[in-house]
Amino acid sequence: MEFATLGRSVARKAARQAPSLRYYSIVHDVPRTTAASLSQTPPPPQPQSVFDRALNATGPRNDWTKEEISEIHQRPLMELAFAAGTVHRRFHKPSAVQLCTLMNIKTGGCTEDCSYCAQSSRYKTNLEATKLSTVDSVIEAAKIAKANGSNRFCMGAAWRDMRGRKRGLKNIVEMVKGVRGLGMEACVTLGMVDKEQAKELKEAGLTAYNHNLDTSREHYPNIITTRTYDERLQTLENVREAGIHVCSGGILGLGETPQTDHVGLIYTLATLPGHPESFPVNKLVPIKGTPMFGQEPVKLEDMVRVIATARLVMPKTIIRIAAGRVTMPESEQMLCFMAGANAIFTGEKMLTTDCNGWDEDKAMFDRWGLSPMQTEASKIVEEPKFEARSFDEMRHQSLKDQQNSVSASA
Ligand code: SF4
Image (cartoon, rainbow, N blue to C red; front, side):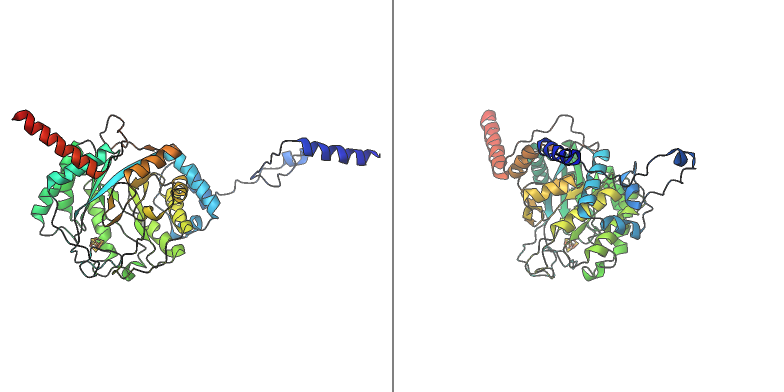
């Protein structure tokens, strides 16, 4: 056998026996170093691309342009999600996911025309309007949420704004104090608030105020006509100036164009004087009777793209998978966590739509090695017991406790 043939056959044999390892490198066409090349002046360093700058960020920036955010949003999804996961690990503990529970403290009868909302009095959705819940019932629900591992309790009232709601605000102040007294973060969503109302809520100890922008400035008039985008931004400013964390995000699936409207939403929030502490990403749950009923379901890739882009553009912000999570299989949720999401709403309800229950979320956390996040704003000192019990069980227990205390005192 000739030497060359022998060489080829040995190489083929070695290749067959070698473990099947493949190496991928992002380094291409590295020029060979020669004496001549060493004597040359090195080329000036190339400016980093927008994507690389975001990937290497050591802190948030709020001078983004829409074009820059669009460039990030358009990256191949695998690359985008991987980069977002990398940034996520730099700014957050990757296994920590915040558990929040949302309670509707005043359902329905709202005068606004948000075209996705079951609580608007303009649409026939068979939702019964209720009065403001009592302070005691809210604190009881917060206790149950805490016992199940939530460290943030959010209270939502279906109102346009807080004008002329002095008594309502007084009760909400008591609710906020009660929730904070349990060592939990307290968040409310009450529509638009002015500076005075925001100050009052801050003094009560409110951690965060939720007021979503919903979508981009351009698409917004197709969704809501009863109040403007700027009015919403004014509420965010009032909240921020009062020293309350801003929680503001959007709803995907409102008939928008992802390439422009998802970018537009992130752009508005990322260029505020401070990034929102929290960015909820809602997936439209189409409600029969609302104008948005019948919209195309949100694609997973659009959801992941928004989460990953937001993570790269607002690295410190907590990104919440909010309404619509109940429609996502666990594998889809995990993809979102890997791309930078780090909070969920858990419990029995998400305002008017279903929510993944505590049992289900606890099992998911166990499977994937996730743990409930403890945040600075929360005063919980011990790790919360992540014990899953239904509302019925808790109510039953509290009834039994009451009966025992009555018979003990008799
Ligand atoms: S989203 Fe809020 S403001 Fe809009 S209709 Fe529903 S409850 Fe009213």
